[in-house]
Length: 149
Image 1 (cartoon, one colour):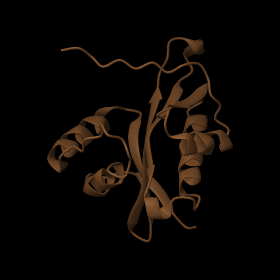
Image 2: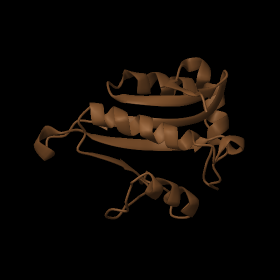
Image 3: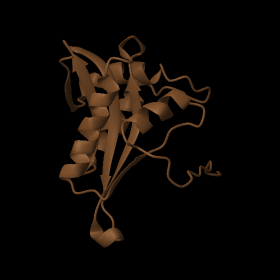
Image 4: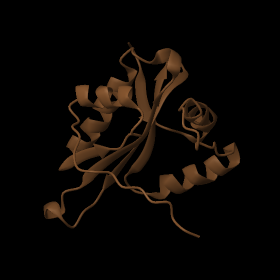
């Protein structure tokens, strides 16, 4: 499958929002395109935080975000955080997600990250199997709290 993975551009925002709407979470609310453009601009100001898109013949079919985070611990080695992984439903099980994750892991390898991590909602067992097949392993616990106020 001939796909291109590249950094997202402002004109990709409507397609990215459409992909996010395919995630089946009851608490998921889409940003308006205007708010998403503002947030995207802010993301672009971070030095090592990028949203990537997978494109096939001009059509956006997948996306993920990658943050390469500096650390003071671990002898200063950075760590990679992958978020918001989505492949368009009609393109799933065709290797697109695998290509995106390999791309992200290669970026982390080039940055000399000591680890690459991601979290996945507990109910997404198919996603867990996918990540484990790529070499990710369950490690520790993930804790979440809703900020008050």
